[in-house]
Image (cartoon, rainbow, N blue to C red; front, side):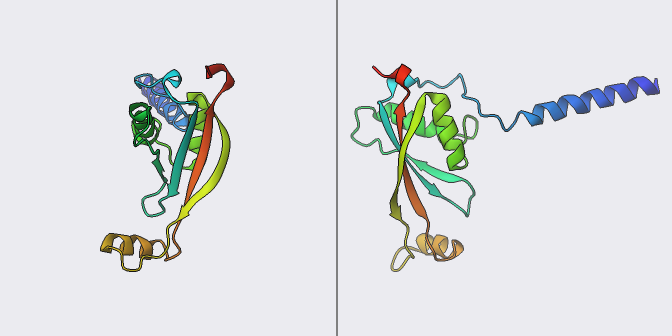
Length: 149
């Protein structure tokens, strides 16, 4: 009986450890309502390091775009904790590759400068960030050749 209990405990521990070892793998949720065919050929994603909260903030400018709904869904997919939950730029590059895009270029969008005369929230974030500000980076992605029209 003791052997049986020992074997059961070891089996459970092995199953749990295997489950957590796969946690770092990137997987696209099949429940996502977005497909690469619906997205534009080029997508520019702005990311900003958010040291206070950890990870990055992802912004896709979809205002007045013909692809407004699709780009909004892509932004939500990349940030959603139950889906891709991109936490850094490496995750962003890998997630976009899985979604059918290839990296083209990156450039600084703007600098968040020290807050002088702004509201209290901006001043608080600036002080917590060390007063140095942070950079916003635009990353340009293009559909992979096999997905282009």
